[in-house]
Image (cartoon, rainbow, N blue to C red):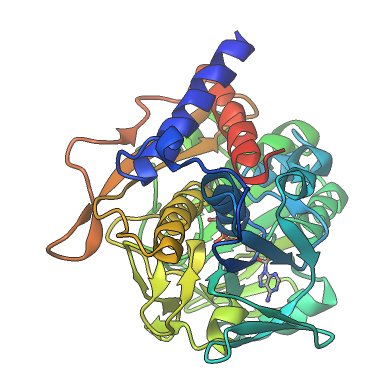
Length: 428
Ligand SMILES: Cc1cc2nc3c(=O)[nH]c(=O)nc-3n(C[C@H](O)[C@H](O)[C@H](O)COP(=O)(O)OP(=O)(O)OC[C@H]3O[C@@H](n4cnc5c(N)ncnc54)[C@H](O)[C@@H]3O)c2cc1C
């Protein structure tokens, strides 16, 4: 059965790839690596957007020089990382190498891009090396607006508070804090006002932490301090999960915006909340590189793009993907969506390098699964079509939707989704 699910979902991810091209077939796009290079593309960021772009540029463009620069030695996935917090998965389960991309001919450079010289068409790495490009892709994810919560930067720097909103050492740190928490302790988590990456992620985290405490430390509490007026995604499904599985463990409070942290006390507007473990998800903006490269031009926070090519509306020749972008209406900041942005950008860049017209009718899609217990999962899905009149993506009426109820079947789909998207981006 597992094989059938995997192959079904593999077919779906291929369909997703085809949809991003708005109907072009994979065969129609394939080219071989023979002949002279048609151009040099540098991709910064080996996460969901950047790694996918590097792979699809190579797969569809063939004879393009593709260099991927990523500061970390391996990819560590945020999706499924909440299960590590719950003790249901290990870090090794969410970690993958870049070997598959290297095998395709992508030059993978471990390094930190410190500057973009858009006029000179080159990027500079820490250490001084420079990489020239014809087209640049930037998919740096998010960075945090620590200045919006008093005391937070120092608390995270000291290790007292973990955000765990970038998977890796932060995930390990929060899991250790949970393991060390006494039975009867309070785990408080703070959710920032939207927009933040992965709208359902915090509520999944509450469920995963509660699932661990329910068996390992049953006298403990999970206090969800939401800066928003209500649950931001799959509301009825999460409310039901809180009620059915974690009654007496999870307490949800709306309009509880965090102003300051002091020790392990969360200071809200009208009250102080003392915790044994305090997990703060900080307010977010496009990653630092987007800021230093002058790509942020919406609300002093996000990068505006031309949705047909993902080219920045601020800096020519630079394409921005994923969480760093100012989203189209109802478009979530998700790994799945970053993967779809990457396919639009890869197809457009190949056309631009060849002097051909770009696809004028792209379609992208998103599915986001959330674990409410170690095995039961709910999903939300949407399809977004380019609207030429308003020059943005709009959701297709009647497409998508949410689960009727949590199920183990969706739990299997969710794990297959993760495997398939990691394979799709990393050629793993
Ligand atoms: C707990 C949690 C659960 C989630 N669950 C889901 C889910 O179930 N489904 C889903 O679709 N999405 C999920 N997401 C959201 C998803 O992780 C993000 O939307 C996705 O990672 C965005 O991709 P990206 O390419 O924009 O950024 P990222 O994947 O963050 O990649 C950015 C990369 O750029 C690198 N980088 C940044 N700056 C530089 C630089 N200057 N030089 C070199 N490298 C640089 C970083 O190291 C990083 O590897 C979840 C997120 C969280 C936090």
